[in-house]
Length: 91
Image (cartoon, rainbow, N blue to C red; front, side):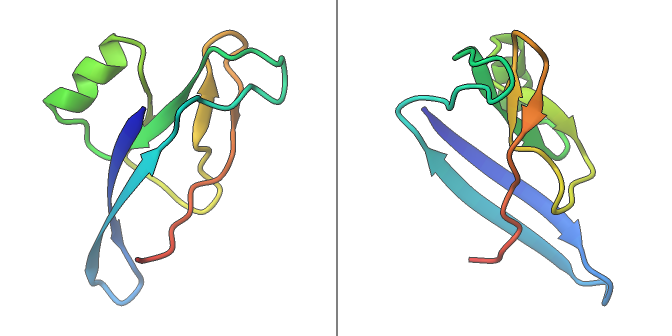
């Protein structure tokens, strides 16, 4: 699975930064709460058509438009647990 993640973040000096990160995994991690393998990455930002299609297929979970360093990166479809942390470092 390959996830393309695009984030728009405005910092305190009012500059707009666009972060693009590609995450490639053979298998999603197990849920640390229930141990299920039925997990998907969480996508942040305003969803475009491709993002909505992936959500409708159950390939991702929508995380909303606001993101910070405590935003979770994974979602368990069985127990609804959200965990992990996104890296907001600039490449």
